[in-house]
Length: 523
Image: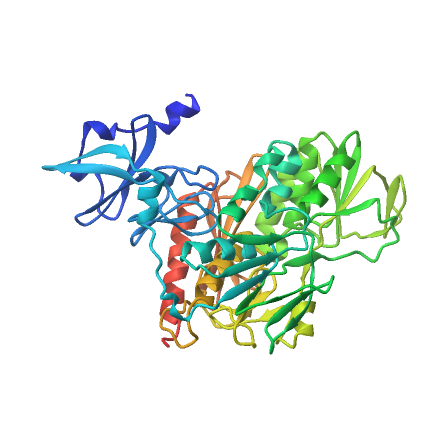
């Protein structure tokens, strides 16, 4: 079956569909006028939307309706059924709305609404009377970009300046270790937006610039060249930097992966390489290993742990992931570290020598909290924020990899290094910057953490946060790539990983959200 035929599966809604065929609280996928369309129902209310997620074109009809929203099964983007708006990342653009007519007990889809008609449904949901005159965003990654976009979506008309130390405009960072590094995603797919997007929305995007000081009293951010920008509110979204290994290896031989430039450098080094050593069996390290194998490079993974990912996902998943990589030709050297390296090889702590043309380290990251600490903001292995993502200084917020925030489910302060979390925090911080501290419109950040990891033809999704657990419950078969893995602590499920069960992942996310809502104190 072709892609187009698959997309247009289901009934032709232009011919009419019985209302009874659309489940209450559910949806029905079909098509109209040659495009995939989704019909959803809440009681007597009917909604007609485009059926493909605007993130990676995931099939919304296989997702989940929660309240008046629909969630994508692939990466948990969330859209309003009423307006089509992308309410929560990773999708940043709305899905189209469709006009329809009810005739008796049938629904007839008629036409796709234009972009302007769709946009009219997306109204500002905050009172801008107390909005600051100007906003500075320090950082051009997931959180910073999502915040700038949300400010304009909320009809904020003040000055927005986004200052990024990166030389490239905001891009799809998860792809740097996945399809782009593997060679199956073109570079033009990597930017999140065209440069015209920032110009049209009057977002001053400053690249390759670094903020060196923040004056909390005068409300001024100063760059390394002495230029300064005043702000009414400020968002710190400085992200994290790779942990550098204290190993005697020529720096030009050892690569780290964080930026688009890093990924390009690894691709260039892989050209013509026969063997590579990946130091670290983290998700990033293993994704790099899979991508290099896709390029035909032999890969050795060296890591101090006895099995990959055991601390995060447990023994069973760790053994399974290792088996997947070994089946694709990856050699593991576990319980080992690299003691030194030269132009042709690395030497392990047991004296073993591995010849290689390329070395990549993926042993974790550290939050870039120095700017916040120098400004006198509270830090604790990250920048400390409250439930609204505001730092210890009024009017200054933090989001993304640097933010240590209270978990809505248990109150513990956590810091999450996930792309989707960073985007959603940027969106929440943006809305909160536009209202007064006493406003009931302030929004707690209570989104359940979510990430996904892809290796060859295998993906795993993870919702929740489990720094520790008492035991693991497995429903289904890990080896069969069809399972739901629950991580439980003190009688509660704190996280769920799924393989081949995308809808179950969405349902787990919804359950954890409901638990957080019950635990959240009322202001």
